[in-house]
Length: 392
Image (cartoon, rainbow, N blue to C red; front, side, top):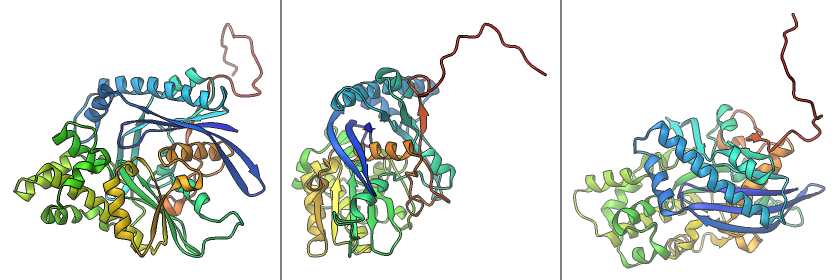
């Protein structure tokens, strides 16, 4: 199968597109990357998405307009994916842009992704799988993270089929940082551990008028503020046990404003960015140490932040090694897009894509809703009816 995977994360900076060919040999699923590309959102679209996210108030009209605008963007991204796949694909996976993930008292109640899926199907002429989180939530799970289905297959065994002798982890640094842990004789763990780029980008937009602190340059020039770091590390979410998930519903610009106001003293911008960088690095290191991992395979946009990656590596020195997924043939900037392509392959074959030990669901679930691009394969053509009658 050729599958195009799309991914737009909580950083809402654009769409990652990846095309892959999947083949099966006995108990091994082979993924052959056919190419990937990142398509940036323009400034106007980023502003519209940001205006919808908590704590902002919005209208149904704004949601509808954004849904259709995002559908056009995802349709264009899917068309790029089709080119990467050589002109045709069996399936497109378009999870959409998350604008709200509803969690109350640690329980996921619902989730909302925008991206007018019918526009994607109409553009590419292939079936589209979307709404990948709802089935797991209906089964009592968090609906996130979903990438552990990819991680566990990548980390569970070496080329000889031998299970790893020591715990290993996969780390994704997007808007939110999530971790998957694969350990011998233990259930797979995977959960959102806290902010990666979410608060950093919020601060950059607010105080630098930029989408991010490029390469972590301003953070590198600053000094960690001990009082602010302590206040941020006191967030109850970090102490909550998995399964758990979070997003911009918690870690947004307003959250940062509240902590700065409670501090009661000004914090220079570079020091603020240095402190937020240290926060993410400390949280990542603490979770890796908690599980005693010996290696961390990292991916995501946060790897572009050299200061952040340097701090994570320094905190893990002597205990675990940090390296990128590209060393295994998975491009670090497109890993999640490839992971969603894999989830599409699983759903196509009626296989669960969510792991109950990760999400907390009562049972494994086949993920997603299907949007066909035309009649189902094998459907018998029929003449359009002229009338309907009721037989009693």
